[in-house]
Amino acid sequence: MLWLYLHFPHLLLDHIRRDRQDQRPLVIVEGTGQHVLQACPEARNRGFRPACA
Image (cartoon, rainbow, N blue to C red; front, side):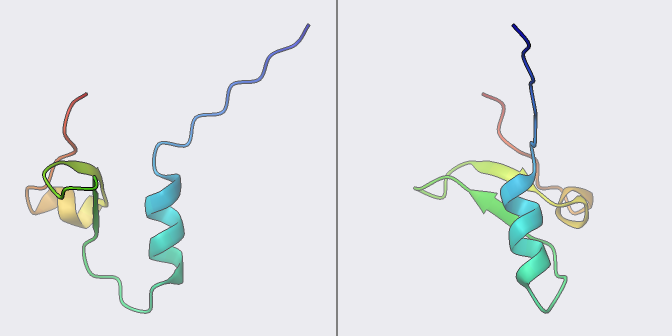
């Protein structure tokens, strides 16, 4: 039996950024807006960091 593990930690972030016209910093937050799930490099440079699970 063969197994294949694919890990795309920024798939949603990359998809949203690709469809946007502007390239401003972007973060993705969880439902209540309390925790950052993903942050693009520009947002991380400005101090946004994903919450540790």
